[in-house]
Length: 519
Ligand SMILES: CCCCCCCC/C=C\CCCCCCCC(N)=O
Image (cartoon, rainbow, N blue to C red; front, side):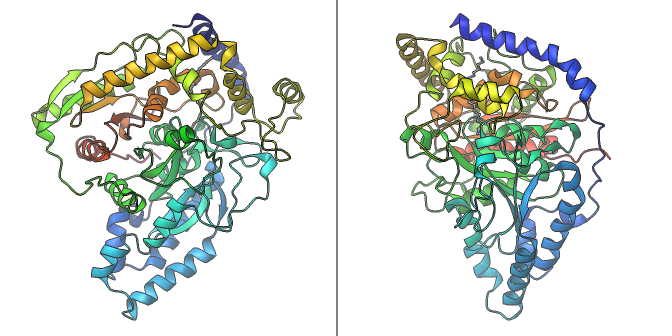
């Protein structure tokens, strides 16, 4: 364990108690988000697609319902950064016309375009042709995507209709969708809290019932953490099975391409399957997503917390309870349910040293004049103190962490990287091909705005699985006593995404999945 790192992380965790009174004084009133009224909103994308192709409902009607819902909640949430409602309605009418004239038929659509006529929302960092593509960077103001990213293209080819792009932190680096370009996104369950990040705009819209299926991205929890905070499902796929080209930030670096994934976020678990099939269609790996999983043959391991917690916030009791409830539930299926015992003592050091020494890491302080030359951190911090920096505090903080050598020398870095490999091997051995791990996605439910920066080490519960290339699904597990969503993460070995999804589906049956906020 590296004591300097742990000490800084520990002090940072405690600092939140100094700033809490300031936050409390400056806090805004909790705003009421209107409840969902239109029953269309309570149908999954899978059901909507079937109803549209079987002419039970028109795509135009569905798209209109979602536009109406977004317009109702977005003034409160600030999740949408640019929309294309007129184009979307035109495309929906065209879908309906092609069905009416017999140009397309239900049987072929189910196979060739399983999302025909279904609305979609997209994280702004995943390019949608013609829409903003800034990655939340002030210095990229006005940048538009000149084509769809490959994942978005696959969804569009499957018939989905993008409605808008949604908010992220600067460069998607952080756990609050808040930046100097678009401002901050509120959590629909409590608007004084963050919707998380980096796919926080998606999380907020989905949690509020203003989207049925969304595209997010995740390099250290950015799908799973907002999915947790907003009570929805989010799947971080095995790397390489969904193309990430068309994402900003992007790097040609091999490790970056292994850590960063694009994946689906949804209110209904069956829609994760559908989106995964569409988005991974050309991956060349047989993920067997349609194959039934023999649940009674699964070993379900569970881990309520990472043990050695110096400098890592303790996992809240309600999240721990969600982990034990979720794992115990599988006893009823005849599964072997066991506590996961591995030594996580050096996991934080491993995560820090591995993440920030990846080859060809994208610039953290964007310098549009010279993409090879990063701006000076100290100068940027000074400017920030006077409110003159184009970089958010989170970007500055992560740029500071990138200087890993402040904490450890090369020898230690190599040592911790080796420890990480051993840890990965232990996880692999225990999980094998057929087992899953249920653990926290984060240490708490949604935090107040501006607090996640003090809890950066909570990222441990997500980032390890990016570094190791394991798939993982965030599953909602009900609301806590404050009415905030809690949930768990289901992890499996690479290419065993189907196990995560199968477990998620059962948990949805058992615990109710997405639960709308109380009015
Ligand atoms: C001094 C406190 C140190 C805590 C360090 C914890 C280890 C950090 C490892 C990786 C952090 C990456 C955070 C990047 C956030 C990216 C979110 C995303 N796009 O998935």
